[in-house]
Length: 96
Image (cartoon, rainbow, N blue to C red; front, side, top):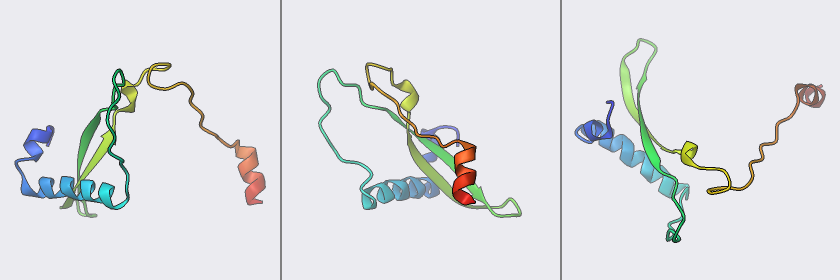
């Protein structure tokens, strides 16, 4: 389905969405906190996909709830970004 409202009409999609939220609960992905005044929470969106077997037949529905981090603004929602990336030479040396 293109819209979440359409997915909510189908029990198999509702089950997939509930499973995703259940896994979040089991793995303690979220901690519920009060939103401070002036702080904008990161919005989320559902990504809905059909999982198919090698013949292309739908075997199950997969729902993922993802954060829309692209809505954040530097110096408003965050200050610094750091992502360590190894050079290919270092990886080759490590594997040798």
